[in-house]
Length: 396
Image (tube, rainbow, N blue to C red):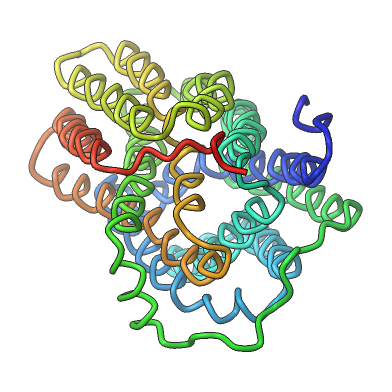
């Protein structure tokens, strides 16, 4: 836990946020492992699961804009606490509900909670980071969270195979309750007081955000990694189960795919801080594209899983650095107003991947999904060459 021991000037709060991320991510990773399988047990069709997941994504995307006044007017720590409490309540309900319509309704409400949690936590990370440490601190936080994404799927796979998928929600509840206790014990405070004067005009904010070429490129590249994760967390669980590989294999795969992230994200985030972002983005997306295309030509299921695990090396270059790049190109005043719109890139990337893949699966075999993701990430690799190559270590 090196991130708990580093010097002063905001690193101790970063360490506390890292510990919170460790426990919350443990719960989210466990649920993420079985979520699409859980939905498929009611819907009985992977394409239908894709369309429902796309619906949740649209709700979240709209919510990022609607919560801007809430974010600017209220304390970020309190909002984050409320979001975690909401998760606890919804996960308890998911553990015993049987009606798919009620589950979808709660999933829509949960999509709103996601936007509140992601936005508040991201702003808190930036508030506790110095100008020349944003990328490095993002790497620390992502590394802490990805340790959970390494362990969580293994635990979820064991619980699901030994008991049932709904029991996994109860494990997640336990992790989130621990996080709530720690949040209170750590006494983390938001640096910036709530704003009295805010801009409620969503269309004006949207036009202003996309009026900048730098922000447009940051938006597209930031959504790209979530475009990729849609394959891993929406479609690969169903692929693994349909191939008869079982819940244990699913858990091992989703744990193994995080290993490169845990080992390399902090290293790559420091490298981006020293060398700049452009090459990091290009290599990351290019590695994913090449390995996605390779999966199209492979017939052995275990070999496909192995190639996707290797592709996480590329994801490790992108995941923490794209958000750091966004924070580097906006001012402090713009941070709260634009971070919500920027986060819709998560949902745009996820939605486009989920929806188009669902359509592909209606008419073509699963292997053509790999071609789609290969083309998409290759486009992102080429687009990344157009960004400004910011070097954080030159900043004071």
